[in-house]
Amino acid sequence: MSEDLIFDIKRYAINDGPGIRIVIFFKGCNLQCAWCHNPESISGKIEKMFAPAKCISCGSCVEVCPEKAITLTPEGILTDGDLCTVCGKCAEVCPTKAIEMSGKQMSVSEIMETIEKERIFFDQSGGGVTFSGGEPLVHTKMLIELLDECGRRGIHRAVDTAGNVSSDIILEVAKRTDLFLYDIKMMDSGSHQKWTKAGNGKILANLKAISEIDAHIIIRIPLIGGVNDTEKNIGYTAAYIAGLAGNKKEVHLLPYHNIAQHKYSKLGKLDDFETLRAPDNETLIRAIAKFAAYGIKAEIGG
Ligand code: SF4
Ligand code: SF4
Image (cartoon, rainbow, N blue to C red; front, side):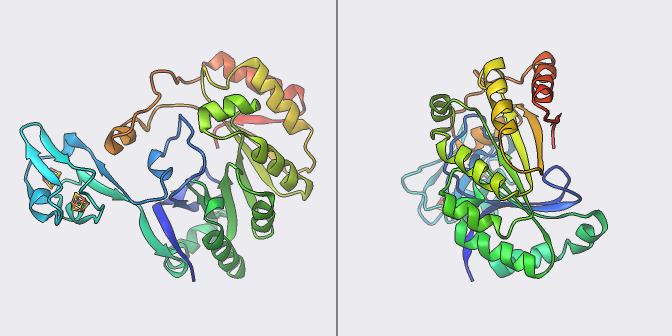
C-alpha cells in the first residue's frame, strides 16, 4: 500500500461536500495561486514553520538540533536553512509550539483508520471523506487506493481539485469519485499563468471531460478583488459553465479573505496581500446575477 505526505486532517468539516466530513489534505500542488490559503500545501516536502511571537527563548531547540542549525539571538532564534535537514527534533521539544513541522508521511491504512473513526458522523449526516490539498490528483496512486478503499466500505468520496493534470488521470479518478469540488480561477490563460504559475488549458478541458460523463460537480470560484472579479471574467466563466454538458452542476463563489497571512510569515514566504483584496458586496451581487442570466444558480460559500 502507498504512502504519501499529508499536511492536515480536518474533522467535522461542513463546507467541503455534503454532511459532516473528514478532509484529508495532501501536501504538494502543481499550481501556486497567489491567494492560496494553505501556503504550506504547495511544496511536496516537509517544511518547518516558525511563529516568533510564540517563542519564549528557552533554548531547547538550540540544544536538541543535531545539525547545530539554530542560534539563539537577542531577537529570538535563527535557523540556518543550509544546515537544517527538517528532521523535526526542534518541533518535538518546543514547549510553546513556536516551531511546527508541516507534512507527515502516512500510509493508506493509517488514513483509513483515521477515516473509520468518523463513520458515525457520516452515517448520521450523509457525510463522508473529502480529499483535498495541495492538489490530490498529483498524488494519483495514493488517491486512487484511498478512493477504492472508501468505495469498498461504502463511504461517500469527494475530491477537491483544480484539475491541472492529464485527462487520463482525472477520468480514472472520476470512476471512483462521488463528487468533485472543482476550482475555476479565471478564463484568460495568460492571467491564469500570471496568478497561479500555470495556464488553464488542462483545467478547462478536464472540467469539460468530467461534465460529459455527467460527474457530480460543484464548481468553486475563488473571487479575488483586482484579480478575477471583473465583469468580463465573470461573464466568460458563466458562459463557459452554461455550455458544459451534464446536469449535476452547482456553482459556489468563495470571496477572498487574507486569513492565511500568518502562515506565510511562519514559512518565511512572501505573500501578495498588498495587492489582493476581498471583492465588494456589489461585485458579489452582480456575479450572482450574471450566473443567473445564464440559468446557473450561484451561491456564496460552500
Ligand atoms: S528541523 Fe532538525 S535540523 Fe532543522 S533546525 Fe530543527 S532540529 Fe535542527
Ligand atoms: S524551543 Fe520553541 S520556545 Fe524554546 S527557543 Fe526554541 S522556538 Fe523558542
